[in-house]
Image (cartoon, rainbow, N blue to C red; front, side, top):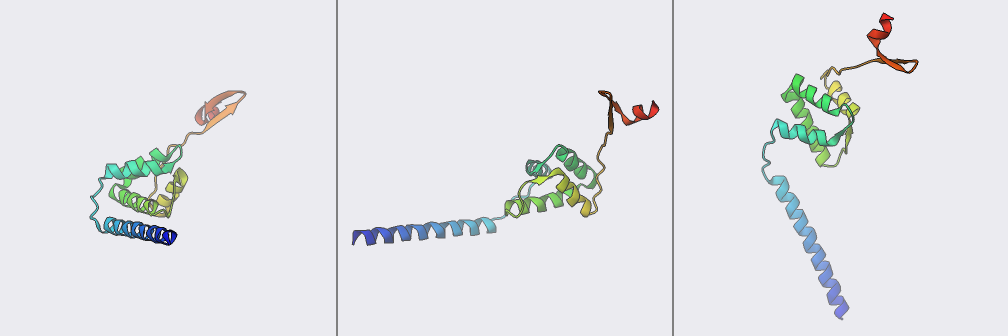
Length: 127
């Protein structure tokens, strides 16, 4: 008989915890969110984008497209918070922006290695 009471108490406790979690989620969804500034959005997007060119892509997107880029970043962050996307690579972010019509010029350097020495493309052509 005491085992039955313990099992009932465990079931009630688990049900109460589940109910409290559901209430907390509902309250969080209904709570007014504080408006994030562009700098906050940029810092958060930098934390989820990986790659050597990520910072350059993000900074240039904000410089060239301003509020439009921030809106795209906010949407990406929403998807990340919901768990629909995880970390992004720099080339994936670049492709997302490009598919939305945001052309971001990236600095490209061509280096040529001959006989163990590295030269720029213009130096190699001049020889």
